[in-house]
Length: 114
Image 1 (cartoon, rainbow, N blue to C red):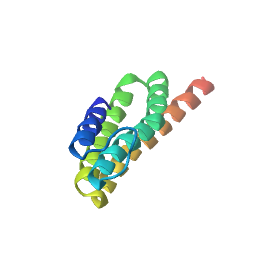
Image 2 (cartoon, helix red, strand yellow; image 1 turned 180 degrees about the horizontal axis):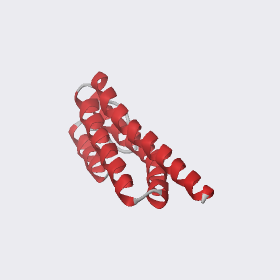
Image 3 (cartoon, rainbow, N blue to C red; image 1 turned 90 degrees about the vertical axis):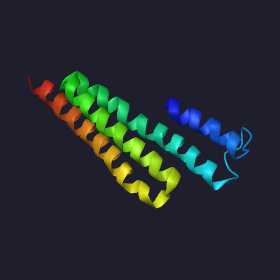
Image 4 (cartoon, rainbow, N blue to C red; image 1 turned 135 degrees about the vertical axis):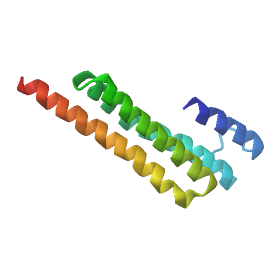
């Protein structure tokens, strides 16, 4: 997420977008949307990963975290260079979010049963 912050800051200078504006150049808007979409995604993912780690284990949570990270990087690079190509990265990261939530739910159910 820090990389996204620095990338947006650099894009503000490159495309002459003064804060608080968030529009004005399509290339800047792509960089900005990557940052905002990543923040939205992390809000779904982090609680799921914590629940997964707590009830099923750290290794599985770390694996879902790695998958999520790969998906977000793919998504971000694709969105900035060619927005229609971002779907694969989105699907990878959402697969990780879904897996973390399902794993966490499974762990909670097991804990309640025993």
